[in-house]
Length: 422
Image (cartoon, rainbow, N blue to C red; front, top):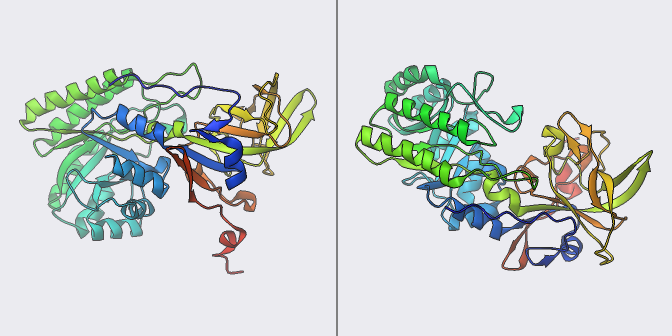
């Protein structure tokens, strides 16, 4: 498993996956999400040593993306009835070994419970109540359990999924009680899942592996799979690094080998990437519609806002930014600029730090009509979009082998008001 090749960081970008930015903007309008399939498949290949790569589709759930990853061997993790239906629509079968679709959550809403029972979708239970509710309707089936080991990790408090302040997973000290509950309904616990947050580092990973080993030995010989969850980081800045995938795999595989020896049978090792597969593949192309001078600051105001890409306002997340000059002049001096969107909201700024601190970015000098590209926007981009300010959802475009294909049309005003009764 070699070190991932990093997409280049550039300040002037004229094409995406061999297709002109100008052509994409003119053909599909702006704002528009564009996905380069080659980067998704490259990232999937980086993880082939794991027995099962299970895509966390919450990161980017477009049916064309799901179909692409399915055809190249990735299975899928879902967190809602809607995501399960998307997976089925994209061609994933409901049952198989390993399960093609897993529903992972901390609760069942009524729709999701009815759907997984009806379709016999494998369930990864994140709370004792899920075990009871599922067992009452589907006794005798197999389940996995998501365990909260008592500690967590994440690049932001809002992405930390372990520890006593996290809602996720079954508290590790309640595992014994949950096994009793499962046995009461004849449910067979065949796997354990442990995901403590995004931005995994190896020190925390070693702790997770130790906690997983302890939990598996408590459950016993019925365990046939373990999942380390996701959280694999990608570099959003030139200073950031990928996790060492060789060491990442070695830690998990060593844990698996010890457990196989202790239990006396093979154990499937799963990984559950979301961001890692799709973030670098995604670009949000916008048009600069105003250049404003506010005291000592220059603002580039574009036609995309946090209704399209919410990560900066949610986490102060950093996205690389590039400019595509509409006039073809690639020799632009650099200036300090703040990038904001069109929404009637002071927080609608793409160049902000955690806590909402507005921060200028070194960017090429630009003018109205130039295109500005928010990069590494394939994960938690479109899927977190909204209709705030009655803005339509942006279209999505997939580029494969130099061909751009519309895979979601731009939402219309009629779409926007279709369900309204007033």
